[in-house]
Amino acid sequence: MKHDRSDVFSGALPDAPLAMPKQVLERRRSSLLLTLRAAFAAALPRF
Amino acid sequence: MARAHVTRTLALGAAALLSLAGGWLYMRFIGNDGTSLLDVLRTALFTLVGFWLVWGGVAGVLGILAPPRRVQRRPGRPHGMTAILMPVYNEDAAASFSRVAAMNRSIVALGLADRFHFAILSDTNSAEVAADEIVWFEQLLAEPLAEGRLFYRRRERNIGKKAGNIEDFISRSGGAYDYALILDADSLMDGATIAAMAARMDDDPRLGLLQTVPEVIHAHSLFGRVMQFSAAYLSPYFARGTALMQGEEGPYWGHNAIVRVPAFAASCGLPVLSGKPPAGGHILSHDYVEAALLSRANWKVEVDPYLGGSYEEGPENLIEYAKRDRRWCQGNLQHRRVLGAPGLKVWSRFTFVQGIMAYAASPLWLALLAASILAAALPSKYWWRDNETGIWVLAVAVAIALLLPKFLILVRSALGGRNRGFGGTIRATLSVVAEIVISTLLAPIMLCFQSKAVVEILLGLDGGWPATNRDEGRVTLSTAFAASWWVTVAGASVLAISTAFASDLVPWLLPVALPAIGAPLLIAATSRGISSGRKPLLFTTTSETAPAPIIVEQQRIFLSWTQQGPAPADAALAGAATVHA
Image (cartoon, rainbow over all chains, first blue to last red; front, side, top):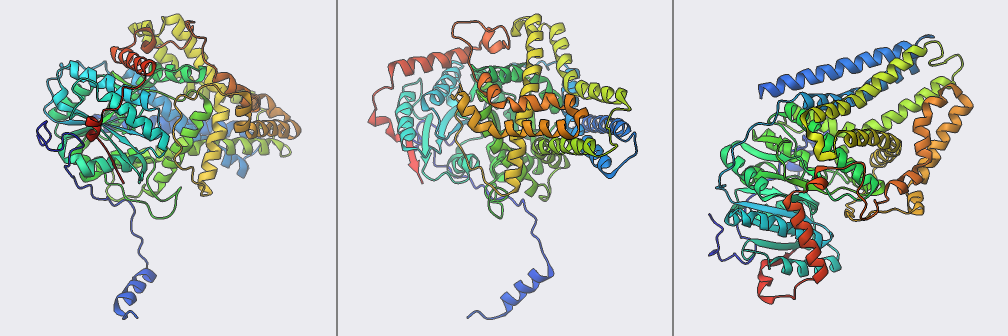
């Protein structure tokens, strides 16, 4: 076990990070307008 | 799992058939002088709200028919390491921390101290309460084997509320633990129950979450004791019925449950929903969503209604109940945003709909009431005069749907000797009847509060995150009036309008209108406590007649702590407490 009395973090919460990736809950809405806007945004130079 | 599919199909079929039959009956008597568009609307509303009414009853009946408790072997020593998490938010620190002390003593007594750590995860933003927490945590550190096992940390920014609090712990320390037992600030669990849950997680590597059915304890007011009795006497049967239908796609109620940390971390990172609260933002009722996400990742989510030794406290008056309900309502209505989330199990989506309808049904009942008054007020639309038998049949059918499960539970408890823990069969019978009377009187007031909550949320008003005032008991008449004067006005208006335009309806509306008119009186009266030293006649529960050792121990610790005051601060122990942003 990572956590025992000899652990350097035994005085405070153990430093044992665990990734908690964000889940996808909302469906992305796509439309012709959004696709065109994204295409133009990608194609046109930014000023 | 096949049994759960069959059970839920049969239950859904039964609820649908019964509500359709009720709708047909309703249509027959309201449409006896010809069917109008209003009649069709009323029938549709009646059938829809009737379905959810019957659905609750079906769960109760299933629970009564459920097979007896499985004989479980005594759990061995758990192998996995469990973090017992108690998130707190501006709570009474002495009360919450004394529960941790009692649970710790229970675990130490079992010789399992090396398998269980405790972490108090504070989101408190009141400086005064935060200072109290430090003081009482130092007291807690004087408990047996506390060093290196009992932790406290406070977030200065409570991002994501309770779900964010747990997520913060897992992100920083989750790798050190196999399981996390998640509590509320008012949770209390017996060490043997905690150990049995960890052992179940060891034994079944597919089990992602195991939920207990907590029993409400320590209620003092009439309102609180009715809720406590209902939770102890009736709820276990409803929970058993629900568990039969849910199978491996069970519920998570946010506390008194154990999760497998790697599964939870991989599956339950909650995104912030697009848009502003109340529809968008952080997910409020995170527990339902987390259960659905675990199921989506093919982890088993189970509820075990037979696991005892799990307790919580409840609101002591209707105003505190309505405050909590407002928060839950906002959380449940927010679930409409995740109904279409990719990959969810059908049952998880149904659970979201069920949660939404638990609140949406209230304004639908009011709409049915309004449509009935309108229909009766229209010329030549006497809604029941020519068919008195019909209305009585319907009234009896609705009463059966509401009351039958409760009386069946009473009969089964009498036959099985369970009533002994509730003061004997006579007192249990009187308590069930009184529970029905009081809940019937309070139902119209709750209906109004829930309808107001739904309307506010649909109008985009965010209820925020009010702290739960668990000790707030007695409500004065003026406070009750300030909170519910509009319910009185609504009840009086309904009665006045129906007297003027639909006098035939008045006798049928009185059971709804009169409690609404008397809302302040009822709220104040039900918040009164029983006299100290007097043994209450009604609503006795096993937690009072034969309190579990953990309940007695926690009360003893709390009393000794609060009578003596906290121990002086020990700087050497301060390392166990951390504060971070």
